[in-house]
Length: 241
Ligand code: BJW
Ligand code: ZN
Image 1: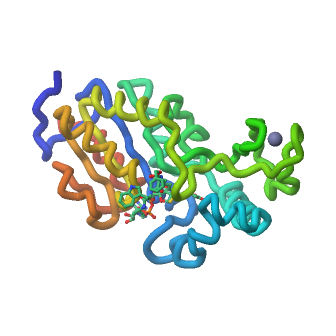
Image 2: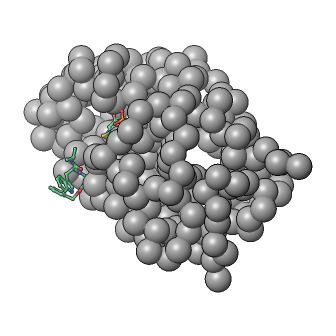
């Protein structure tokens, strides 16, 4: 059962369960570049050359160079105030983080229920033999599979890759059961991830969008907090008296 929520009075602490659906804007205040907009990754790098299986098959070293550049950036980044507030909420209500980010900063901040829809920057896999490994080497110097000698690829969901079905299900279940769904720092243009919040909406959750600007998905939300995540998130936890 979902209670009716007055958008002006929304306070996460009055609810039992919340899903945070996060995108690149969540980590912007940590120094991780977003994908779209000014300074975005796709402004400098064409994803067709760096973030799809065809690009990797054509020139794995080039694609690895790009991912090593990103490892180098993320290795220097720390969770920000927003990541920490979300992690701290776990002690007070049921919190699930459904993230499109690959930087691992939610987990680093202490969140324990994190669904990584688009994989993880620190994991690699061999599609030849199924070998998987994890580690924070930066750069990752020798992307050859220790088991079969084939190329290891980043365990990231590139364009055209299928998302892991068990992760989609976990995300849908959390969305269907939550009282409040808070989308933070996502442009809402990449599918199927962008469709997941609709599950929460249909199930009657209160819908909150935190973003520095309106997005393709803004109409889905009841409450819009316009500003950086680290500044807006505390407002969702303030006691009004
Ligand atoms: C702040 C802030 C602050 C800033 N505080 N806010 C339906 C229609 C058309 C196409 C498709 C479709 N369904 C599927 C597709 C194809 C494609 C797709 O969606 N394309 C669209 C672009 C149109 N999808 C796929 O290919 C997916 N696979 C799939 O569907 O398989 C089946 C299939 C196979 C073959 C053909 C067709 C279908 C896989 C998608 C994988 C996405 N992967 C990436 C990159 C991984 C590589 C890497 O990282 O190296 O994941 S793309 C990139 O975008 C990354 C992100 O997770 C994802 C989402 O971006 P996000 O997080 O929203 O970031 P931004 O930059 O877009 O937005 C940042 C936001 O933050 C902005 O709104 C700012 O305002 C805000 N902000 N600072 C708060 N401080
Ligand atoms: Zn292998």
